[in-house]
Image 1 (cartoon, helix red, strand yellow):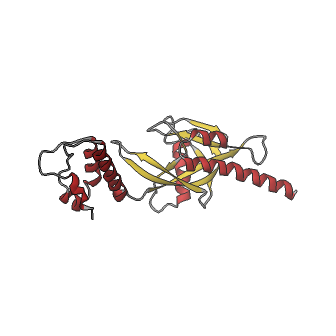
Image 2 (tube, one colour; image 1 turned 90 degrees about the horizontal axis):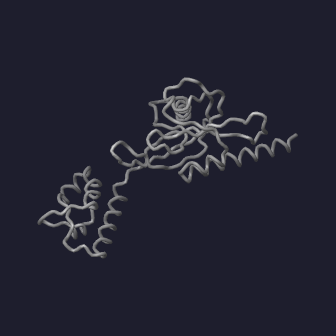
Length: 219
């Protein structure tokens, strides 16, 4: 149920639309109970700072109330050993998003009954031509907002699986639609935007260094 204090900006007179009104309407249009009660949303004639602050607060509350759980995706953090390097010397694969051109990792939506790590493997092949095996256990996850056609933003959680690359194939479904680059974990963390994904690159680098130390001690 919506707090009927919303009546503070519902009026039966002339409707004056604004950007805030459009935003509120888009939030409630799929909620019939609310839409029935708030059929017309208006801005009162008073447009002082205090009134606008109240409107913004109400809109923020509406957004929180109607926010849907994040959609689930699965991603592959692809890595390979640097030729001639030590156990901790690895590089990771970054690709560009087709929609925005920003640096990301291969990822995608669930595929029926296919297991999540297998989905990550498939996405790595389709988007970057990667052939390899992904770990069955998730390495971590990160959140981001996916911009859908029309500009709508959908919150997504990406479960990330480490994938050791065995081969880079010449032909794959999305060849030519993205840029691919192999970089260090540190460089990858600089390029991606999502803070949680940055952390995963740093964690991978740290874990490889720890493994290298343990191997040296065991000899």
